[in-house]
Amino acid sequence: MNQWAHQGNRVSTVLGRRLGSELLRLRDAAGKTQQQAAEALSATATKIVKMERGWVPVRDPDIRALCDFYGLDDPAARDTLLNLAKLDRERRKAKGWWKHLPKAGALAEYIAMEDVASRVRTWQLSFVPGLLQTAEYARALAVGEGAWDDPDEIERMVDTRLKRQERLRGEQPLQVYAVVWEAALRQLVGGPEVMRAQLNHLLELAQLPNVRLQVLPFHAGAHACAASSFTIISFAQAEAVDVIHTDTIGSTVWVENEEDGATYRTFFERTARQALAQHDSVVLIESIRKGL
Image (cartoon, rainbow, N blue to C red; front, side, top):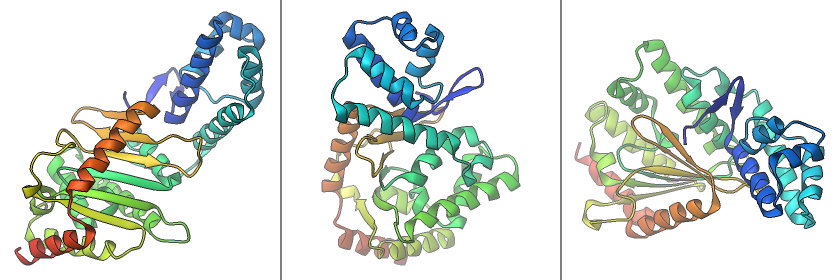
């Protein structure tokens, strides 16, 4: 699924689509049509379509009315929907610093999610995770990718990456669990000096209590996550399920349901078990750095 889904001037969000899918599931289970649901709200069927596809924020009175109409009496389940709708509305209203990014449509929703996340688990095949990159490394990646034509855009992208890293420190720091393939640490992005500084930076960040860093070494052989990199974003609120983000060459994909999310978590855990423990990972990083 593309990261941003548009309908006219409406934008669907990850949480909006999650809420919409729950409302659709309840309507189907109750055997009601969109027109019947619309009549329960004294609205049009178009409004129900927009709500179920995550195109618009959903008001609490509409949530309560639909729960009554669909026969959902469980207070906990109703509260889950109300809290999910509240979270979605808050994120739609947020005027975060990321709103003015270059090419924001491909990046802003991810950063908005990360900005309010409590935990990030990331598996990376090809490069150091963005939250752990130096400015020079990030700049060299951007130049190498060739996706940025304007040098000023590259610098704004680098600044953005550094701004995101502020969440690693503070009163409630982001919990980061990163597993990185050894190849990503040996690829000379930006040349030996840039890479040496990047490895030093990783060694420093690995000392933070909220950062867990493991390296999957070459000798580990075949592993569960060989197909692609991905990031699992978790939130403090129990009703906000994990969201999985993965980039391909041509698109960004969000995985937004609990069943598929559990699959990604299982694959991440399997690969993490094959990776070196953090202490041994640090030893390997130091060895690679000394060899540059």
